[in-house]
Length: 307
Image: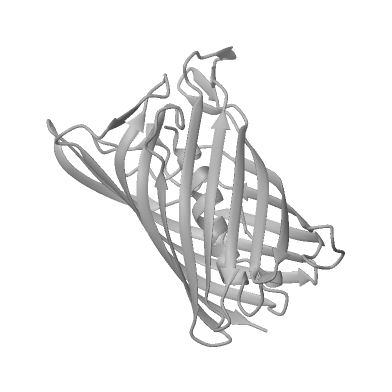
């Protein structure tokens, strides 16, 4: 799959689950899904900083006909990522977030053996505006506008210097995202749905110009807040994009599709310190992916908040 497809669906599922659970502290009405970046602020918080660690393992792939096959014998891939997070509230309904990642990949094949590489990933900035808070005007749900931009600060695949391109850490293009999220509470339960559309700039490699099609990511999440302020959330996401274009002409059989399931939880150590974790898997079922690597993995996020 393209690096951009993997990164978007990963954020849409795993990070939405993390943010949903984290915001659920104390009462379900405060929960919600941050789709573009993690680190969504609760209503009483004015800022936060955090450290994220993520690991993923390739388990197989879906081909151009959406058929799934397990990883080839003798080949393996492990993707690692660490990121610094920060969020600031600009207004009672508006907040911005920044994410700066470092990425590493270990990859091996039967013929070449193992290889490890990494570096700075693509920086991301995002904003969230809550037009209507959850529970503010029942029976209407809470509604928020999501926006984000990703800068091509990582190394693109075509610029990689290692034989297996393990030092490639970015998509090689600017990316803008715009979406909408809705959420509603039912006692300690919260249900959230969101949709995000992403556009990427064209990539130029020599005389070849490649433009990826717009991508749509859909996320559905359900969370539960316990009386002790811990919380859990389950998420199902789907990302899809049409065929890419090469030098202005559509390239057949280059479309992407991926479906991911995730489960996350949050453990508050105090009013200002919380630990979040998630596990996820790209569903290894025929028809649920196309031209996509299937990955399973986990993430941990430690957040320090300010009120």
